[in-house]
Length: 188
Image (cartoon, rainbow, N blue to C red):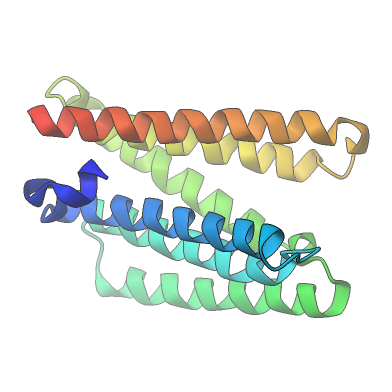
């Protein structure tokens, strides 16, 4: 809430992308919970293509803004996001499971690589108190472990609940670091 309510933070281009990402994730979670508990939907697979594509597009746009990338990279991001959406939608339509394709793997690998590039780029800025460095680190950690869990999930069917517990712990770390970052921005 602080990220949206503080005018200084809201007008900062570096932080707007991350606030949009958090808002998108919150919106998807609200839609999923509403469809499960209010609409009594048995599956939320139809939202998966929107989730993966939106997550990819928003985070990559955020990273490219931080890296001051050219318009060519924005166009390439849109094309890859379009591919991911089409691929996951086809997987959902044909197999009733949108997570079987390579769209999420491409998405997570790209996010991991760009987060790593930003972390390396900002190593010097860690000493100057760059508040977004902790965000890059937690995004790298979350998506790295999430990709690993996603790749081995089919082999560990008995441990499925453990995988979700690990994912929820990492999500909590990501959201906790977001709260901490916005708190630090208040002092920045």
